[in-house]
Length: 489
Image (cartoon, rainbow, N blue to C red):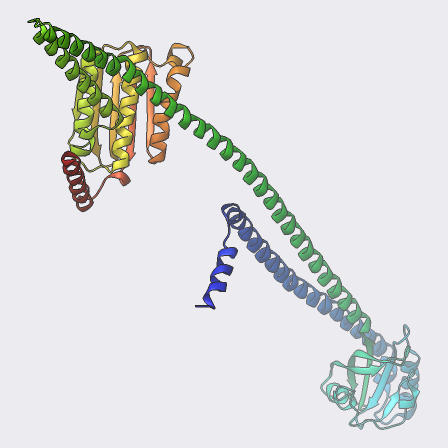
C-alpha cells in the first residue's frame, strides 16, 4: 500500500487538463504525420538516388568500355598490315608491331600492353619493369587473377577484365578496366586499360551530395513540423485563454441572471403575500374583532361577522395553496406532467378569462424528474408572458411523447413577441432566456415562432430523459411514498 500511494500521486499529477488534451489531440497527429512523411521522403529519396547513382556509374563505365574498344580498333588498324602479312615465327614483324604498340600512348595513364600466352610480358611502355618477365599467377591485392585471366580472355577472342593495378601517374593502386584481344597466330594477348578511380570519385561525390540533400530535406521537414507544433500550441493557448474569458464572462452573466431571477421570484412571492394574503388576514382580524364586540353587546349580527371572517380565512387558505402550487405543484409529483399542465392551464383560464384548450397523450409518468420540472416551468413562463404581454383570447397547449422524446407545444392568437412587432423585447427577454437555458441543460431544444397573429413555443426533451419501465415503477413508488409521508406530517 505504501508503494501504491506515490504511483497514484504521480498518475494524478500526470493527468492532462482539458486544454492540454485539446493541444495533444491537435499536435500528436501532426507530429506523427510529419515523422511519417519525413521518413517516407527520406526512404524514397534514398532509393531514387541509389538507382540514379547506380545508373550514372553504369553509364560512365559503359562509356569507358566503348572507348577501350575504339582504342583496340585503332591499334589493330595500325598493326593490321604487318600482322596480316607476317608468318607466325616472323621475329621482325613481331618487333615492329611491339614498337608500334609501345608508341601508342594516350593521356597520362593510357597505354597498350602485350603478354604472350605463356605469361611473358612483351610490351609495357609505362611500366617497363614488367617487360621480359613471366607473370603467370599474378593477382591484385583483392586476390583477383590478372595475367592468367587476360590470357584466358584473349584465347576466347576478347573481352573485359577489371582489377586493381598501380596507376602510373600517381604510383597508387586504383581500379582498372581493360579490354584485351588475342592475336592467335602469334599467341599474343593485346590490350589496353583505363583507370576508373575518377568515375568512382564522381559517384561517391554524387552520393554524398544526395545524402546531404536528403538530410537538408529532413531538417526542413522537422523545422516545419516544429513550427507547426509551435503555431498550434500558440493558437490553442490563445483559444483557451479566449474561451476561458468568455466562459468567465458567461458565468458572471449567468450568476447575475440567477440572482435577478431569485430576486424577481422573491418580489413576486412578497407581492402575492402582501396584496392577497396580508389583506385577507387583515379582513379576518377585523371580522373577528367585530364579532367579539357584537358578542359582548349581545348583538345578533355577531354570527354574520363570524361567517365573514371564516369566508376570508377560507380565501386566505386558498391563496396560500395557490402560491405554494406555483412554487412547487404537488400534482406534478403525484400524478405526473400531463395532469399538472392541465391543472395549470385550467387555473390560467379561470384567472384570466382566456379560452383554453389542452391536448395530451398519456405519459404514464415516464419522464424523469428534471424533464418534468423543466417542461412545467416552460409552460408557466409561457403562460405568464401570454397573460402579461400577448393580449390573446385563446391558448392551446399540447403535451405528448413520441419516439424522439417529449414535446410541449403552446400556441396563442396574441400580438406576438416584441421583436415580431418591431419593439424592444427587454420585458419578455429574461423569461425566454430562462426557458432556453432549461432546455439546454437537458440537451433539448426550444423553438419559438412569432408573428403579429400569434406565437408558437415548442419545447422538446430528448429520449434520454424517458425512464424505462423498471425505473418508472421505482420513481412512482418513491413518489407515492413521499406523498403519503407528506400527508402524514
